[in-house]
Length: 126
Figure 1 (cartoon, rainbow, N blue to C red):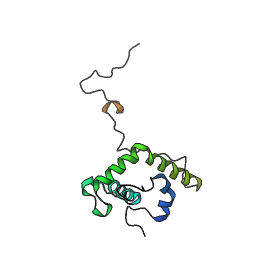
Figure 2: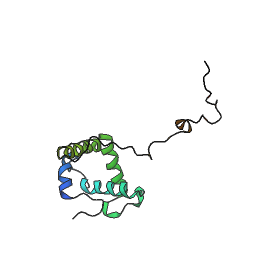
Figure 3: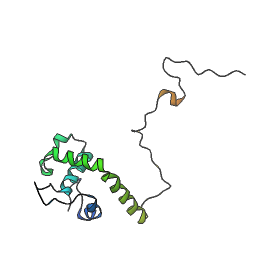
Figure 4: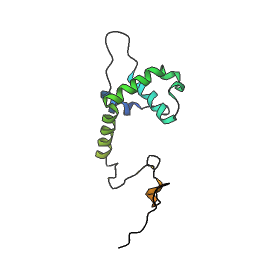
């Protein structure tokens, strides 16, 4: 059974091929699944990188792996694959849309108020 914020075996099997296989030469590469579990723990908990539990390995290693995956587009491929899988199972309602209000900042002018210190919105006389 997977711990909190960690992938189950079934979930890992779906996305495992998106990650780099282990290298044969040089220093042994840290397990990608463990590194991904560390990234998920960090993103879900909201903690700082340095506060990551030691069970995921050195926080710098997890951070560098996260950065590499981000730069290569691994997370985009992962989300696309999961979206297609959920859509095939009929679990996505394409008529439902959501906007996260924490990401959309409204200005004073968006509610009809004038800019602070600017000209007032005067009616146009014809």
